[in-house]
Picture 1: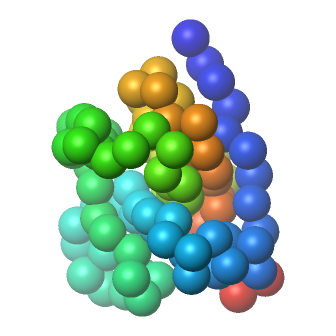
Picture 2 (picture 1 turned 90 degrees about the vertical axis):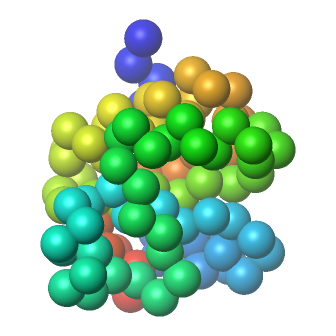
Length: 98
């Protein structure tokens, strides 16, 4: 089942992160090391299951290589299927400053 994540802009994402939202970079570890958004965690699709310990009300904000990145779409779908109710897609890290 494909559950599209709500799109979110950088300004709103920053406010949610300040309030405790988790910012998740689903790009490759190499791209993450080369530069990400400060405070973001790097999780592969396989690692998304580690979020099971988080409360389902925790706000999750994902970003990837592109707006339609396969890993981005799959990760947001997986989080929603796990029962998270606040799942957002920033699209790309460049959107952080928009």
